[in-house]
Length: 125
Image (cartoon, rainbow, N blue to C red; front, side, top):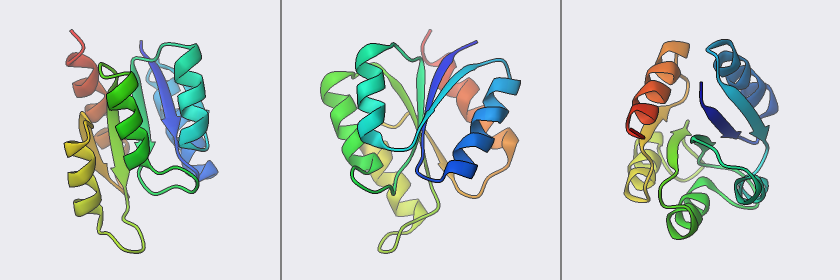
């Protein structure tokens, strides 16, 4: 069982992903933006973050940069369906360079997420 923080501005998607991970036995907290995520991380330890890349106010790239500076050991799964100006593959490639442990393209199957979570958590040991 891991403590996982999900960051995504798409509420139905965020709730669905949270349910999937809770059903797999994890403790999950969901937030709608990267700024709220940084507040939560400052107060509580998490084993893993799962973040969208393209969000308002602060995107996943900015979040990854902040994590690299202040929480370099935290594991992050970056996910993206692409943005207005960037393909999902390019967005995820940039996320990897900024420290994402695992990458997932949207849309994806539940098994893709569970495998990425298992792989990211295995790298903690």
